[in-house]
Image (cartoon, rainbow, N blue to C red; front, side, top):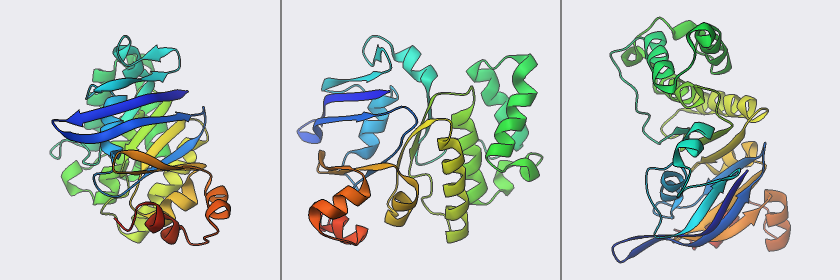
Length: 238
């Protein structure tokens, strides 16, 4: 579904990504983890067409990021860490506005909005302004935004950042529901979140992949039970 090949990105003399290679299979929930500055957000921005790499390539299905950015953007729904939503708009009006931008057909729009409201547990707040919502609900609106137009792949950058434990659990369940139908790549600083949600994890450190496996295999290979200890060992406590 996604193939990242020798991906490298420099910001001046700073190497943010250093020859990164990995694949994501169709229907997989992949957790991209690492300390601040590891290269997670840079990877997402290149994948979604917001940045160009210094070298390397990404293929999404049969498309590559140099020749087919428009086609790739149609395949991917992206939620950055700070959801770009308009606080003065009603939730329904905002999602309808996003549907306009994404070109969702008028005759299918209401049913699509109803489906997203159900999937993201937004039915009870569709009539409210975004400014009235808790951060947890705002994140759900952002996820619904990313899902607009029914993309095959969902990319979520820190979707549970700043949420309380109840909101984290609710967002986790939404991601699991979405993962039954879509390929998901998401990052998180909450290790228990990755453990509970992901089929596989990749850990980045200083722009390089230091682990890429199922968590159970990683535990066996390192002979370390605690995910926190595994993470600390591979990132040198960063």
